[in-house]
Amino acid sequence: MSRPKVNEYNSYFKGYISLVIGESIEEIKLNHNQKILKFWNTISFDKWTYSYAQGKWTLKQVLQHVIDTERILSYRALCIVRDEKQNLNEFDQDDYANFGHATNRNIDDLIMEWKLLRESNNLMFNTFTEKDLNKKGTAGLKTFTVKAILYIIFGHPLHHINIVKEKYL
Image 1: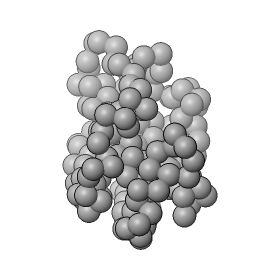
Image 2 (image 1 turned 90 degrees about the vertical axis):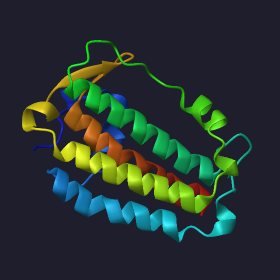
Image 3 (image 1 turned 180 degrees about the vertical axis):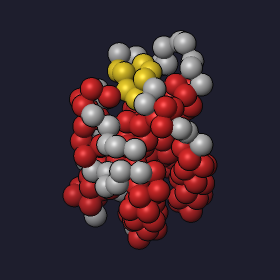
Image 4 (image 1 turned 120 degrees about the vertical axis):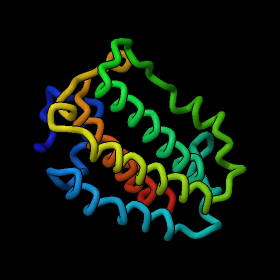
């Protein structure tokens, strides 16, 4: 598997994809799964309800957003692989954050949910053939390959980890 080319995804996702190290599913998993999980586990309990400015998400909401986004992106990948003909919907990340009730959630449960979701998605992506990974689909106005979605799924939390380090910790 090669890295996705720029014609395989909308330019909005370039930053996420650029953060991912690896050119196979196994290599990407080895480079990032434990690193991401370890990061979430190092945040002190008192920081999880912190927001760096009025109207910005708490760290619990950031992690819930990462979970929601991975869940949606993995669904999109599955739909594309299974030759879904309908255009897939976009989603409003702020609405999802506002209705997600993350502030009421137990942080250990949030971290476990991310871990289990990632493990499940890793298993799903392992079943995809090279042909599957190169299939294209559309969500809203954005078109991307399944391979690009895989890279976005790994790059998105890395992007948010960088923001957390810069603005929250």
